[in-house]
Image (tube, rainbow, N blue to C red; front, side):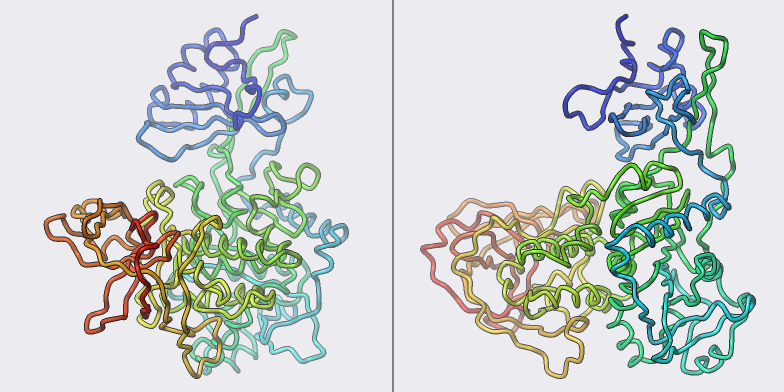
Length: 612
């Protein structure tokens, strides 16, 4: 019998297809459902979960041999984001189990006994079976912790003695404005005497519950374990994030909560979690298929909000400090909107069953955290440099409450890299590779796809040549680029810097290369289209050329009123678009990146300039 023309009997295509089977409109499924049982199942699931004109939606069926089946859909071709439905059976002997793989139901309460039992099982298995994870466990304790074991109703801020030993958990959370309870110089002694558990916001109380469930005595929470109105204490403790999160027994991530009141756990209407489709079988017994929202796991494992459905909150994934905490932690429990996820140095697991102890290992080639955990222990300088670049590119997509935190929020990670002989740290770059490191630029396709608007820091001390002066979708220049004819003459190091990994260590570099004056224009429609970074530039007697401005608000004009700019480059490779600092003949600020221009650079002389 020929396969159904609409669903193709949901058979995966041969060869590499990314799991794609077929696609169409909701109306196609509805019409075909009268003669095809599979189409009728897909249509019923779509009709239940897509409440707005399901017949008009576009859909595509995805299934790889070892993976679960999902139906992706969106309401119009203009929409970028797809929503997903997961079709599954419960048992391997079910009629449709070869197409709709057996998996777990979602529970309406993520604090249910089943999920908490799974959580403890993941950790027990890791403690007993994962040798690489066991090798990272130790008795370290931070400067201060919260003791959750003395009294069920009171929590004690505690400064451990040398003889005290861990383990402890660490909380990663969004502040989301004002946190209702913080340690200050005035409350420090009071909190040591005990704090009523009712005084803690919900996220903190839930984290204390999890800590007790794991039979840990201590938990570390930043707002309480750092004296918030002491600059000295804040600097000292901020510099120790690699120790705090890197030595935690488990890091508890409040992934779905936008502030300290959101809590770790979620409750859902059971009708939003599952719909059951039944179809008669030849033996008279009904065949059963279940439908639920498809859960995305890759964005959580990558600590990235990109790829999550807009209806699924993941505010923690957008924060810079939390990204560092995630990478530093050897083991993470991530509390999401629908389930709990587990990550360690050996495995990934989830309550829904798509990831579990038996079925898959870490995919190290594409998993940034897995690479971070493994390559920092043993990797070549080239691989370490690529890893650092990937970390920075992911980090620049994250938000900060204070622009001055751009370096401090990555200082714990920078500390680990600095121990691997990458050289002296230069505001997020590394001195031995400083020439190549200067040539970061906008990732325009990613920025446009997700409507990411780049911004320049308000931190006045941060020089424009460092990636730390911007936020948005940026990337390093490919390693295949050749940089000839550029030389760093000197770096003006700032005196009296106590922590060069967290502070601006230099504002000016003196550099020698080819410098060409030019006229630039473009972006005249900036106010209507602020995400368009493409501009034009032209030097005397040459054709004009395209380039990318770092921040669109920094240059927008029409061709009749162009701006004076300078292109700095070597005799080969990409260039930087600069602006002369008023009142100076040889000092410039960076405003953009250009490739393949200007021509005939090897015929031009070199100049020495200062970049700030």
